[in-house]
Structure formats: C-alpha cells, structure tokens
Length: 174
Image (cartoon, rainbow, N blue to C red; front, side, top):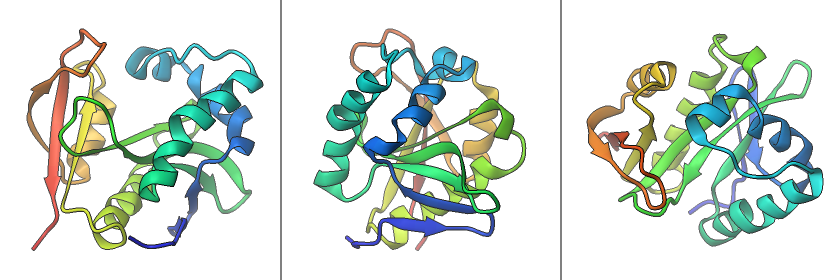
C-alpha cells in the first residue's frame, strides 16, 4: 500500500475526501441521480454531512488508505464529483463507484477519474480485482463500467436493500 493520497489526470485532480468537503457532498447527495440510483443518505445540514463523512467515509480511509476521492477540475479547481474504492457489506471485493454533479456529466470526466482510480487500485494499492454495482435502470453507469473494462457477471443483493443490482467485475491484467 502506498502513502500517496492524490492522483491526477490531464484535466483532473483526485484527493481523498475530508470533512472540509461537506458542503459539496451535501449538494451531491441531493442531486436527482444520486437520490434515484444510490439512495437518500438522510443528511440535510452541513453538520450532519460532516458527521456522515466522519462515520462512514473516513474510517475506511484510515483502515485501508483509500476510499472516496474528491474529483477536482484543474482549470478552475472546482469540485465536480467523487469516485473511489468502497468496502461494502455484502460484496465480495472492493466496489469502484462514482457520482458527479449533473452539469459535469457527459464531458468525459467520470471516465477519466474512474479510470485513474481503477489503475491506482491495481498499480498503487495492490488489488487484483474490483467489482461494481449499479441499478438495472442506470444505463449511463452501465455504459461507463463497460467502457472501463468491467464485465457484467450477474446480479446481487446487498444488505438492507431489496433491489437486485447488476454486478460487474474486472481482474488485474497479467
């Protein structure tokens, strides 16, 4: 495992999420696609969002050295989304996930960020395999996962969720 906490691409900076990102995270949690495809996190204030980051995001980062990364556009240092590697209950393997503000979708940012984190998982964090989950209705997520080289392997249920999710998987090349 590396101590490197930031990554970059041609257009983006990726750094681990911290409590100072609470305002952005609160906005992201209330976007229509987050609510539809990921689910309501039941936070409505900055203080509740800080508590969520402290209880749900930071423990994994402290335990594994990676987790949720803030995606920042280099040209203006604007926070545009998140992506990361998530240790989720009910999944065999680390889940690669992503979410972006609506105004930054369809511009290649998600592919650029998630591809960099996928490569970091294999090259920097020593992982041999990643999984991803998405709803059957989230066609844009499915398309991106396939573009990243993940293959649909079936469906799964995660604890405390009745919706059957599509399960994707990718193994480290070599």
